[in-house]
Amino acid sequence: MSSDRIQDEVEATLAAAEPQVEVLLVEVARGETLRVFVDHPDGVTLGLCERVTKALPDLRERYTLEVSSPGRERPLTKPDHFRRYLGRRARVRTREAREGHRSFTGELVGASEREVTIAADTGVVAIPYVDIHRSNLVEE
Image (cartoon, rainbow, N blue to C red; front, top):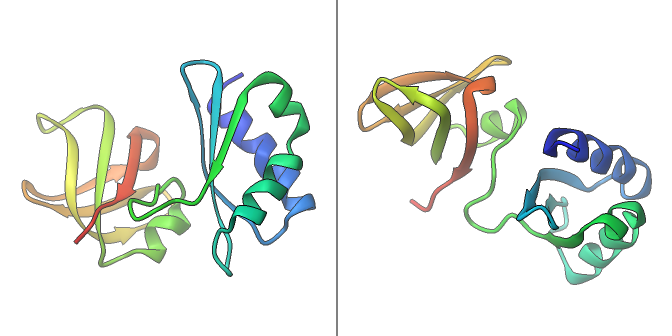
């Protein structure tokens, strides 16, 4: 099952079980570990991570499950994430090289429904979300 389908499954399950939990990123590591990064308006506590883990019994049977907070280098996976952090520094890595680069680090200056715009060292670049391999905030 693809990471996108697993993320959809996690989001649907948690929408019912823990409606205030925001699923930031779901990734499969080494084919056996499922990492789930979550956020909550009141912060991420050990108790919240335990509740999220218990709410995903089917996935616990298939994977070693790791649930955690996003940390300082918060993943950015949706247009809303990019909009929320406009003005902050981020690293955006693309699936294919663009203008000779696959990684762009700079200030988030725009986020539409289709693409993010970043003021990187190499200039201002607009990157469609479908071309993004991975992205996250970086420390200032």
